[in-house]
Length: 261
Picture 1 (cartoon, rainbow, N blue to C red):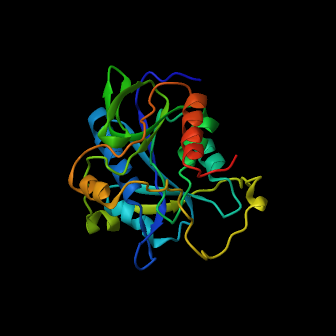
Picture 2 (cartoon, helix red, strand yellow):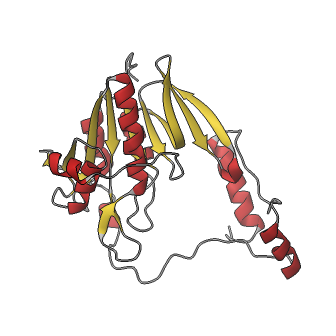
């Protein structure tokens, strides 16, 4: 992996979400937070800011990112059968810092793009970031953990940082910036997704059923939980390898009979 001595470029990946009520296309609040953090870092350290979207350049929701401070949005044409991660990786090679939201807001999005992109680029990945700063040419990130825990992470360039929805930033919308900015489609070679044929796309018939452990406490105990701050059980697994963490999740699912293997 190539080392970068200076933060001279910052890229932000933005997506198109859907309004929860109307279903109309709109900007993603997650990606808007990533854009605001990137704008602050670029201003503080004199870095060039690039805003990228893989999709359709004619989508009007992209102009919202101009209003939120993006000077220009470069769009890499990407269809449903294309590999967005591969397209973005080809464009982002050589960029020391890439920021993105944790997941898109289209519906039940997978949130896998930051991981696939970091793997394709060979970059380090820091997920669930609440704030990002630069200290001694290294990244200092405060990471969100469940149950109110926070963790400080130190990382070197290059890196992909996924911003958590609870990041303490307030994007500001200005129509004048939308009028001054531009959305430009870029010429790219198509990159077909080898797994696209295995998926069947169609309208949502019913919402996915979430795995929830059966509630075994009495009504009185549940009422006390609603009025106090006591723990409702479970474990926060921080230490250990990825295999050990996966085994902890698998053990929980088996204990509560959420899976049968």
